[in-house]
Image (tube, rainbow, N blue to C red; front, top):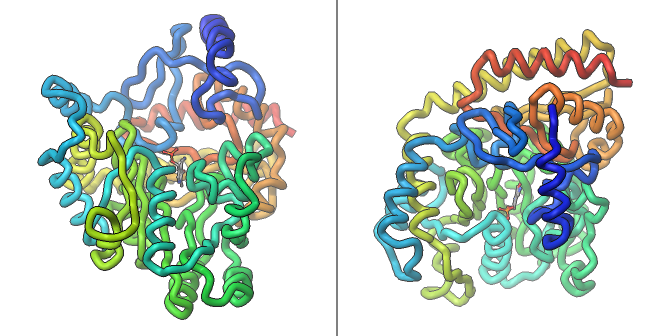
Amino acid sequence: MKYQRSSALFREAQKVIPGGVNSPVRAFKSVGGDPVFVAKAKGAYIYDVDGNKLIDYINSWGPMILGHAHEPVVNAVVEKAQKGTSFGMPTEIETEIAALAVSMVPNIDKIRFVNSGTEACMSAVRLARGFTGKDKIIKFAGCYHGHSDSFLIQAGSGAITFGAPNSPGVTAGTAKDTLLATYNDLGHVKAVIEANKNEIACIILEPVAGNMGCIPPAEGFLEGLRELCDKNDILLIFDEVMTGFRLAPGGAQELFGVDADIVTFGKVIGGGLPVGAFAAREEIMNYLAPIGPVYQAGTLSGNPLAMAAGLAMLKELNENRAVFNSINKKTEYLHNGLQAALTAENVKFTINRVGSMISVHFSEESVTDFTSAVHANNENFKTFFHGLLDEGVYIAPSAFETWFICDALSYEDLDATIAACKKVASTLN
Ligand code: PMP
């Protein structure tokens, strides 16, 4: 594959955009080399500016669950755009998508739309603090909830990829209200709660972690957190920015049968446009302005183009629930193929998977939390990433990210990917 034009565009971009990108993980910094510039995408494929065709396992970091440029979504956006792109006034489609989301997701009565997953999580925490009258929050090392100050404490995703899980610019005052716990370690959570009695507003977590690679919740972990929250008057926030409308129509709450108090969304709910949302039972959501005291707002929130894309996406997922089974089956097929390919080449690896989220860590030990994720062999990951890219397979340029499977992938694409993995695996340590 040739990437001259991408590299030339990257040099230009770096002159006027910090690091040449508008979000750090895009920069290939941890795997080395220049990022690929996209010309267009359709279905399961990215077409770059040098004319390369790549099988895409990022899918815009999750939203494109039905593939790129999915026609019903594109048509809905085009049609809406012709009627005006933003009003800052209520529109009927906001109620339509809200009603559909509330009907698909268990245990929520009301939902508010924002513009990103970051905003959704930031607002959810403010709401939890306002509702409980308490200040502290518990988050898990390696979980990522966006780049708002309270969350950049041992954060996963790009924050850890670039060695800045605790970002400068976050004040000590803010940091002291974020308590850290170890993912999948209920005993640790219990100890943190005991040490901060009656001070904790909420526990926020990714019910399946996707920002330290994919890490499933251990048996009983989510149930145990629910119980601890109930006993201690703490709200449980599921950050379903990745898992929402992906693992099941009702997300992780439905898949695991555990109720959260507040749920946050992003990615799929916006069909590829900038959308986030947070939702809860009525009693909690009514704490929000304009009917309650907790302030939260947005000039472009509920934007008609974004709502049109999100509604087209959710409608299709709601009406064609076989999609969830289809992507799970495809991911399972990929899992089995990768497992066989890496085993045949004597590579030390661990594959974690839940539904259509999957990742490979180059480590023999099971990867269950931040510490075990960090211990994996990153040199092997770099070789693996670039090897796959050369073979026309595009995975996230960091080991601290899940892969996202979309339904546009064919079994031929999966076979080609598995064959590429086998070839690249033979070059690993
Ligand atoms: N929560 C989770 C679980 C995420 O994965 C992300 C982004 N990858 C966010 C929150 C932040 O979303 P955004 O990038 O849309 O602000």
